[in-house]
Amino acid sequence: MNEVWGMWKKPRMVFLFLVSAGLYAAFLIPFKGFVLIPGITEFRVANALPVVLGLLFGPAGAWGAAIGNLAGDFFGSLSIGSLFGLAGNFMFAYVPYRLWINAGFVSQNDDEPDLKSGRKIAAYAAVAILGSAACALPIAWGLELVGLVPFAAIGSIILLNNSLPSVFLGFPILAILYPKIKKWGFLWTDIIDRKYLPVKGRMSGIGAFFMIASIAGGLAGGFAAAFRAGQSLLYKGFEAGGQVGSPAVVLVAGAGTAGLFLSSFIQTMPGREEHVTYEK
Image (cartoon, rainbow, N blue to C red; front, side, top):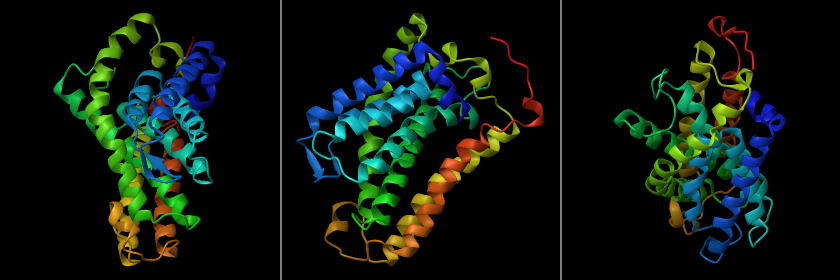
């Protein structure tokens, strides 16, 4: 996660963070009246943005999604869940740009998010869904941990509420914005110091695999444990009853959440083939 901290040394990255946070909040706030779960979440057209912001602006987009979501929570949904929302929305943008580079979804020699090939279109759909799931996991785990909302209900709602806009609306947004952002010199990989750029190699590949496994395992295992605790998916989960704060759900989903964050650090660990001297 070196670039997450290193970006603050670059004024243009700070500017992109401010743009990302402002844009995300601006699209979140008008829809605060379309409540899905009172005090927790609402219909969010803005969910089309974090994946796009991550792929274009990298860590600036991730910080922007996190802070923009927190700013939006001040308009009717601020609660203890906002802390988990901060982490979840950061991962909503962070995971896509990390996996785009490190998971082998696109060619090593052609990894810019221009969506000009079938492989890149498929890669976009994959990272958008994984980013959506990476947002749902820590939020659902945290709300289960504090006994506020059932994991199965909120996890499935967030996953669906994130995936549909980010895939179907985010795709045309990225296709339209990428050429302009590239032309203006605001693509994050063209701004940040090379020493902070993700370097493909053995450890980054292992970390990417661990990230995908943590996201999938944490959600799937959490749902399985939630079902055994009497919970149900989507809105049915609020009528089904079941145990909220189940130790099994907290343990399994918590392991996936911990793995998600740990995998971020693994991807920045250099392998022998990654020891390169950078100059910029």
